[in-house]
Structures are given as structure tokens and as C-alpha cells.
Length: 110
Image 1: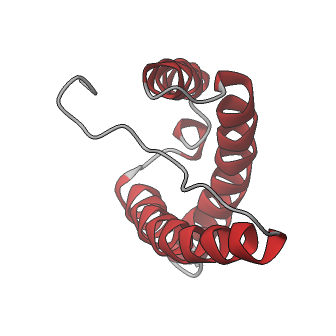
Image 2: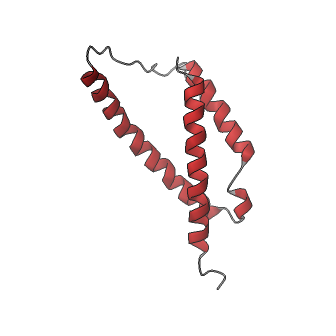
């Protein structure tokens, strides 16, 4: 991702914790919608993959972690925080994809 042409995210100056929390709550609404969309792609991955051993792809995990670190640094963020958050997200996503993989194939071999 080339962030050179993108607007750099910038937090608004806050004077109270209520303001901080209001901005965080608004961001959480946007982030949650994006994570729901991301999860829908995990369902599609579970449908498309034909081999359960392909659900956990360590090479892809490391690619995403490095990419997120790079993007965070380019945007003036905290690479360690973003990587940790993404690793937790990927762990949960892999667990979900395993459940979806099994659910989609339930009864297919019966």
C-alpha cells in the first residue's frame, strides 16, 4: 500500500476524557464494520479452500504482520501495537475459519 498519496490519520485535540471516548467510540463503529466485512471474507476463504491444512498459512500471517507494521510506521503509528492487534485478529480469524470450514462440510461426507 502506498500511503504517500493518502491523508495521514490525525487524532483531534481533546480537552476531556469525554471527548477522547467520543472519538474512540466513533472509530470503534467504523472499525467494527470493517472487521465484520473482513470476517465475511474469512467465510468465503473457508468455502474456497479445499484442504483444512490451508486454513493456517504461516507465510501469509507473517506477510500481513510485516505489511501492517510497515503501514503503521508510514502513517506515524505504533508498529508494535498494530502488529499485536493484527496477530490477535488473525488468530481469532483462523479459529473462525476452521469452524466455518467444518460447518460447510458437515454432512458432505456422510
